[in-house]
Image: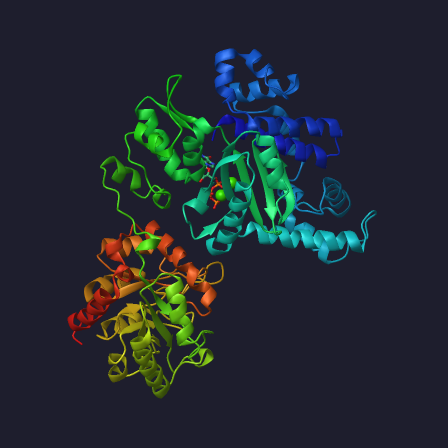
Length: 578
Ligand code: DGT
Ligand code: CA
Ligand code: CA
C-alpha cells in the first residue's frame, strides 16, 4: 500500500475520533478533507517529500500547513502523535459503529457517557433492553432507524456470492457506457478474478472529466447511499447491500491500474518483489525504471516489462501462476464457449419446473448440443424423487423426443442418492439403462464421516460422476464431514468424474479442490443443477471455478461433442468393469 492511503486512513480515524469527542467541526472536517485529497492524489507523498521536501507537500491543493506537519511526522517517524492521542481517548470497538446509518458520533458519545457503553456488544445490549431509548433526544423513531441501520450493516459485512453480483455489475457497466465521457470500463478486484464470493465491487474507467463520470455514477438507479464522491473515485451502496467503488484513471496508466486493482493482493505483492529484483517499480500508475515509465497502457505490457506473459485474472492468487508465466507455461484455460452442454438439470419429473420439451428448447437457446436431465431418485421424497417406473417412463420419453429434436439432444440421466450404507438408490439394472449417472449425498448427519459412502458409490461401474462432492453451501453450511483428498484419490483411480456444481451458492468442488484433483489427473463435469430454467446461465460461474482451478478444455467432459461424450461415457463404464 502506498503511504498516501495509510495516512489517509489515519486522518479518517482522527476525524471519527474527534467527532466522537465533540471537537470543533472545522477541525474534524480539516482531517476528513485531507484524507480525501490524499486518497485521490496521484503521486506518492513519500516520493514528493523525498524529492521536493516540505515545499512539495505544501503545494498539494487542499492540504493545509497543520496536515503537512503530520504527514512529515509520519514519513519521518512512522507515527502521528495526534493520532495516538485521539485514539487513546476513544473506545476503538465502538468507533466501528460510526459507519452505521442512523448512528452518529453524538449518539455514541451519549451511550458512552450515560450508559457506560464501550463496545459494539454493549451498544446492542442497551439498544435491546430499552435503556438507550430513555436517553434525551432518543425516541422510538430514532431507535427504529438505528435497528434498521445495524441490520443493513450486518448484511453488508457479509461477503456476497459472485452469482448475485454479476447482474448488478453488468448493469452498472452498461449504464456507465451510455455516458459519452466514459472511454474504457472494466470490472476489477475479486469480481474480475471470478472469486466465489466478493467483498466490495471494483470498477475502473478512463475518460475525460472524472467529476462528471463520478457524478453520473452516484446518481445511478439503485444507489441507496453515497460513501465517497470525488474527482477520481466514487463509492456507493447499491440496493442497501452492495458496495461498488468506481475509479477514473488516466488513459496512459489504464493497464497498470487494471492490473493493480484486479489483485489479488498476494499476486501484486509477488509482482512487486519481481519488479524490485529487476530494479524496477510497479504501481497502479505503471512500471518504472528510475523515473522512466516503461509500461502502463495495457496489462500485457505491464506483465511483459516484468518478463512475464499476460496472466488471466482467475489465476492471480499467487498459487504458482507467476512462476508458470516465467516459464511461459500457463494453462490454456477452458472458456465458456468451449462448453457444449449442461450435465445437471432437473425437470418437472422431480423438483424442477420445466418440461423435457422446454429444457430442449432452452438448450438450443444456450447454443448447446445437449442437456443431461438428472432428476432425483426415489428416496429423495422431499424432492419428488422418481420411482423406477416413472424413471423408465421419463427415459422412454427422452428417447422418443430425441428422434424428433433437431440440433440438440437430451441425455437420459439421474442424480441418484447415495444411501446410508453407500449403496445407490436404484439397482444396477436400472442405472445401466441411463446414459449419465451422477451420484450424490443428500441426507447425512453432522457427526458422520461420509467418505466411505462416496467411495463406495465411485466404485459402482455405472456411476459416471459425483455431484457436489463436499456439500457445502456458501455462507450457510460447511458441508459434509468428508476426506476430500481420499475422494480425489479414488476418483483418479476409478476414472469417476467430479462435478463442479455451478449453482451460485454451491460452487462445489471449489477452486482449490479442483486444482488438487486436476494434479491427480481427475476429469470433471460442470453442471448448473438448474431447477428453474432461469438458472442455466450460471454455467459461467462453474467455468469461473474451473478456470480458477487451472482447468483446460480437455479436463472437462462437457466440452465434448454429443457423439464424443456418449462414446466417452460408455467407455468409462467399461473401464470401471460395467
Ligand atoms: P474483496 O473485495 O474482499 O472481494 O477482494 P478484492 O481482491 O477485490 O480486494 P479490494 O477490493 O480490497 O482491492 C482490490 C484490489 O486492489 C486488490 O485485489 C488488490 C489491490 N489492493 C488493494 N489493497 C492493496 C494493498 O494493500 N497492496 C496491494 N499490493 N494491492 C492492493
Ligand atoms: Ca473488491
Ligand atoms: Ca474495493
